[in-house]
Length: 321
Image 1: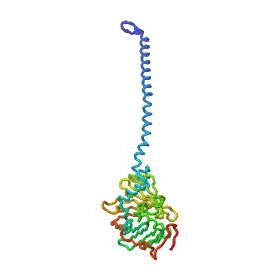
Image 2: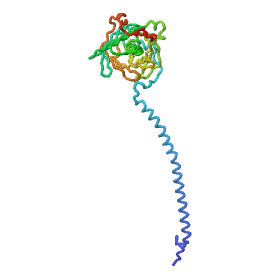
Image 3: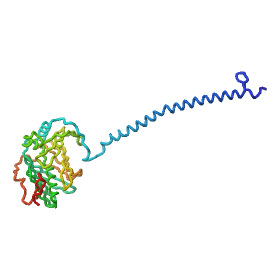
Image 4: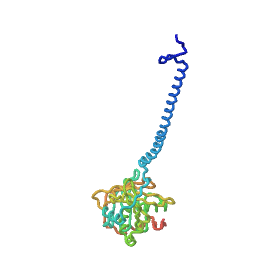
């Protein structure tokens, strides 16, 4: 019998400890190779993981930027400014052609004004170059309010509202802002604009994208006691929005008008109503039912009634209690 200290390998007697040594050495070498390959594999995959993390971080802000315009900011949404594409004269001529206001010397507008649950009948009267009056009467309740402007003097007569002098002047300017539907056209055709080659009566500002529309922005000054910023849709050439600021006591109030679309076949082509906002809050909604252009309106119809409160709007100084 062969000794147990040997192992028969290919017909040769090899000591067991030699065989065990060789097997152990091979195992260690193979294990080392496997460990090395595993290490290299992990090391090689590390940059891929880092790149993925970096890409995810970079994409996140882009996603937020894309989603941001979906937020409804209301009237405070900023407008994107763009370079002007048309000259001021060309733009105004197109506006006059579309609105058919070039031959309108006077205008009477009938409609209704609603605020909360109250509705009033509304009448606006205007005459070149800058005479305006606005009257509202309650429907279903007794109330009458009248505002007027003769080019310098503003007046007010109220049935129910107990306003101080500052409040009276504020609402006079609001009434002018609302009733001056023809202000842009009449400013362009005014003697002051002709003598000064439009400036300083009218000024063109950079175009803006407002409510998804490309709009030309024009500031009118001179005919009324505050500047008005007119937004003209560059597709329809109609005024779609206007804004200004008016002092109420010691605070400036942002006034905005969102005009309703015009109605085909109506002449002159004016909006069929508007929404009036005070500092971004809806104050009232107006719907127009009838336009009466070039009706006989005497200057005396804009004179100050004997029982009205009067303010010199060119200076803002109250003239009577």
